[in-house]
Image (cartoon, rainbow, N blue to C red):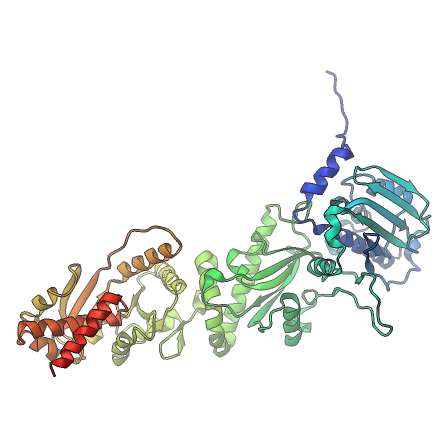
Length: 609
């Protein structure tokens, strides 16, 4: 059998357009890639110095930097480093061949099993060619640390290149990449634009980066790097002060409000990543929340809010994560699916849960002060991730109408003698004040669940905690509110049937509070479904109306109800209507028409005095 072997060939005139158009999701990434390469060149040389490599032994490990220079008249952008540099042979090997990575060769030769600790950024051998996304010609002047002659490499956008020794302007050691900007790159002949891109992608690169846009400098003006080469997340948590954490937060997120607290993550084997997550002050409307968790790869910014690494509910937070082992695609724009990524996600979730539990256990007073600001985050996290709920459920608290905070277990322990396994709550402390007062008179605590997410969290708790039921104060009466057995007042029900909707049930109870003539209760499950339909309607979805199951409870111990049937028919109906309208008012269920009728009825009653 005949067999032919060979290697796949690539024609540059065909692959260059692909690189320019499809390799990177954002054109501005070219600057990140070129500056990253410059940082790698410095990192490699530093590594050789630390290893005592013969030709690098006498080079001082200081003064390393990367300089980005803009020449507006010539429309060129130059990135220069004083790192390892290249010989002509290395230029031909790594620059003239696409996707052959000098970084990988270096790691294999000098690092071996310690490759994850070197901090070298490049891996694919493609980043250099991102320069052609904005350039019609790219020149490179380079001089190796070995003392080999300097080399000039020049290439046009069609892939045609020349190599020569005409490199008088090459740095004493290192490399200069000169990009001649084309029409697509004209927007980068702008100092502000370049500063924004450098700030976005290069703020924490490991080598000092300087920017020169050709503008005149004051004589006494000190040149300062654009970046912080030792960001806070690289330090040990025990070495960081609260003020440093706050200052870092302000610098990265430009948020004038101080964070509530933070988590400094330092994961070593087998995950190897670091970061800081901040809890900002969170509004209660969780639908509008948008945090910002920045993902870095060896101190190079990759993207915001990559959901594969950060569970969705944690995206409400703000923070930075540096994961040097992430399986990124070749453009370092998004992740390849990986079990390693899932492990990082799970580890972050565990760290957040541990922080919340620690705060609750060790400083509950402060935890309760901050609960209103973090409640939405915690509840949403529990709804999105059952494992997170299992971890933090014992540290979640409920605010009571009296301002105190209790856990679910604490509430149920207090309630076991009067309303076992039932949690009474109010969704509006003002409109439901009458109902709340009824419960408090009987010594029954009422918790506040004022937002949709609160009631959804309550439903989740009901599904997990067997037998536990959340009941709004206007959905049912507690047994302790009732007196002796109720007896039906003759004729009273018939009077109310004339003025209430057909689907409203009438029931008699003897209440301890004799001054209260009636209570309107809306079935808990029925009202939850009604609220759900309203929520869908607000999103623009057409939903059929859901009639509520309501019960009008007449207090047989109230003198007004007892005497109702003794009044003449017109007065009795007028009083019954007033009682029912007051019940509607406490339920916030009055329409403009019913409110108008209520006012007219009130005036008529006043006229009877």
